[in-house]
Length: 167
Image (cartoon, rainbow, N blue to C red):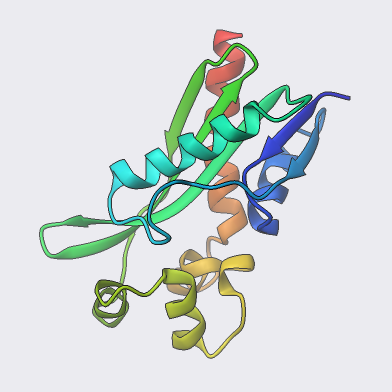
């Protein structure tokens, strides 16, 4: 079976890849994004996704590498949740895609501007543990209408669609 490496141990990211690529064995590995722990722009979030995908693709026996990165980005004085994905194939072609964006509440923005990571802020805000491995900020702020895995599944579908179109 062909192997697709996912640059994370986060179950929401791994499961999103498994659901879109059932014909491949999806394996989560810990890799470096080489960007800030909390990316603060589309550019930085995309760079993190590409770095993760490249490292995964270079992994022994990889057919494809996938990097999925969550971040935030500003428009005027508003802070939005953003997410990016990258797929790198065994010929070093890079495919990228972005997904849902929602406005984050002012109190979340203030904590992020103090240097905290969104996952930690969400745990404090909700009084829950590991929100990032479950519904994510998107699940909290959409009242469960969209879950984090679903958000990343959408991005992975966009990546697979581009790759199969060009493959």
